[in-house]
Length: 261
Length: 341
Image (tube, rainbow over the protein chains, first blue to last red):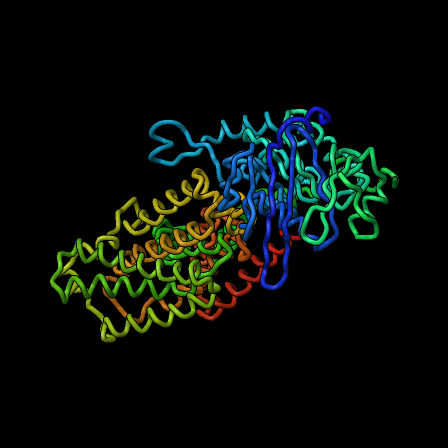
């Protein structure tokens, strides 16, 4: 799947992104390429600026300079809603779910379905049945059928289940690109396993995935390509089968020169 | 890799205490309901038939109408993790405004009424402006506007009470909310019915519209709400505006309740409204709570005051008991939040 992807044009890319917060330069000419249907892992040391770059793709940060290209066309995102409208969904670290709301409420937060006709237009009545049905379908499509009660409050779910809901939410609305920021950071072994399987399922649906992670075994297990970020820019793109984990970490931390690619 | 035990899931039925916790966590409104029923049981034993008399129960409803209505406004604010210390001042300011506009400017009473409610909306909009655009903490903003509105009350009213007869002559519509409808021995005022209708409307808004869900989301986790594409500032501004408008309506109910317009009334309304909201199970940390809980909370406050008075106890014991009820309610909220983690 990924082998052929390289040949085509990238679905989401960036050229020369620059962003400074006061005197701290978070992006210093960062490039980025994501190809259709692949899982691209982004790794980098703390403070390398990968989160800022991802936030720019997600519409949460406005770069000072540089272009973001979606399907080759230049785009400017003023907000995460803009990015979402163009099919880029982001699961921010810390999940961005409202804990006291139910699973259904969270899945549809900010894009609720209203009833048709008078009740929806004038009484603003929500179509709760339709949202429930849709939520149930999405969760079972993604193999999250262990969540039986979709009217359950999110804070009563385990960490893995919450991550599952967040991912389901990102995939649910016809998105092309899903950005996952540290999806397994707070999870135990079994739960991480489930989330990794979930990510592979999402790729199987033809969605392109950006995975930011510090967990090298996870990155090397599921990524098709690895983007290595250092000092505000991309310094290497490697394939996990062509490089060892320790070399990748050495490049990331500056202990080793990047390979020419 | 580590052993599988690290992330194993709990299995088997939970102990009874846990199950009660989860049930309460899912339906926190049960708690004020139970407190209300216990209160009714206690007072029916101590006070006896007088307490259960329909007239007395309808009196309790009349007594909680103002507090209950203002508490509905306060519920919306507290659901967004805010607080409004100016609600009592808005309440009085709007009632003074309605009276003065009708008497001094010889305005048609209906217009004075509408403008008075609009004064409430404007007060709410001012709070909302400082909270959302200047981004000040609601506590500070409303502490400040409480003082500002109180000064306006004194300036506008000149410290004078408008007597019942004057209003009756010039603008009887302002007293309309105080009219009681007889239902057997019970007397239900139009104001009480308006409070219940308002509660029904707000319940619908909070639970059946996207805007209502957004209010909960903003109070629960503002960042999550914003990242979900909710315009959190617009939601917050709207909440303060609606709360101010409700306080404006409450100003009308206040004239109906006391018949006159007094610049001195309603000073306890701030704390009483927060008390009713908190006893009703709404969390001061935002995102959790309900309109029904607030109605029950207001009824609990009214019932305990009424029951203790009928039992012949000093008024101070009412404050004493209600103080403990507040602490109890907040303790339960903390306990429920802890099990969530």
